[in-house]
Length: 259
Ligand SMILES: [Zn+2]
Image (cartoon, rainbow, N blue to C red; front, side):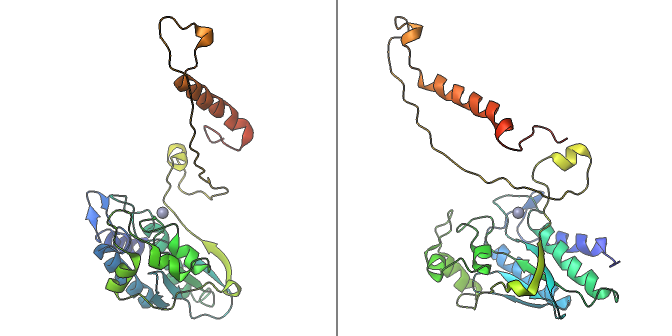
């Protein structure tokens, strides 16, 4: 069994939390000064672990294991949402790194390999999953050129240039290289915590669909319009929400409580 070293994991996580430390968490938007520094530090940790690691032209990091044969790919993201927690993203990056280290250090498993990936802008400061889409070949250069930071208006191209990474060849997945992909992630709901479980395996994920609904009513005198004649837009929307809530348990696997 590879020997996972918890103190090494925690130390790496605590070091990452110093880049853009904010209250009890971090503020580390994509390609901010703190994010760039975190990426530079993490690529160094990957190299210390014996991975062939590089930051690419969209600030993705891939650390390649030197072993032969098919590998596991594991990783997450390093940038944070605005004023966020310190584990969303870094946990998955450091767990992947620790898996790579521990497996390499154990003679019984050192022939196996873990590649570590850090995908840029999963938190969407510039676009929609730019890093992971780049890695799987679904991102044109033109989209990087057009992407601007939603808060500052700064272009991604300029931000990459300032970091010294623009124009670099982008990492691309080699499907034949991998047997599996793993991402460890801090729980974002309360299922594990409220049931006292330490770890869970994701079996399904919510896809968010957003709709814009317009309800049109009819304005009239509140005292003299009979109830039968009223057309209250607000009331109709409330009824619609009630109907959606009543119908959801029948239409999906939604459950109010695990069990
Ligand atoms: Zn995350």
